[in-house]
Length: 257
Image 1 (cartoon, rainbow, N blue to C red):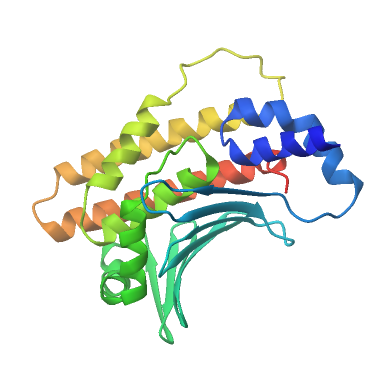
Image 2 (image 1 turned 180 degrees about the vertical axis):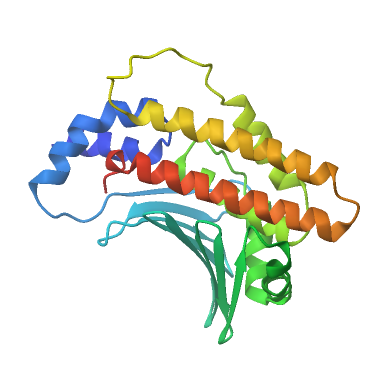
């Protein structure tokens, strides 16, 4: 049983198909036996000392938490929706992404935006830039040493890119673009009868992420102002987030807590 539990932990720890495939059978057996305390993976970021925790909560949602000294960034993936919460003391701000729709909640205020309408982004972006807890969360995300080969750090890199786009910065978005391009899988010829597995989910995810990246480059090329780039970056990051949520959902049966 300990061996099965370890393989399930590996499935959570490793985002990519190889780890998920190796753990499939053991996780399926472990999950079907009885309700247990969810498996948790905790690492410490060497650059900041912050704790990064990944787990599945009782509702089935995948949770990633980045806990620094004065702020916590919590990501929850439930189906095709994600919720990011920045918390410090009693102050908290949430960003919920579902498809192209974005809802920002904080200080008793609600801001709604849509990635297909650049004008709808302005108020939400302005609120986030002036929020102390969101700014603290962004600062922590900017300082952690992220390795997107793992599920947790991949999720946090996307959040760093989204916050960077809201602040009008390019570095995190470009970092994600470079990483995705380096992971593109060569085109393969497969039999149509073969059922989807984690490798198929990954191939489709990276292909879509690369296509979104190309769209961003076209959008930025047409820009002549800071606000135009900010809108392009925001649209790109929301679409990248939606693609990642699809991947998590597609491959979700292999992430067992």
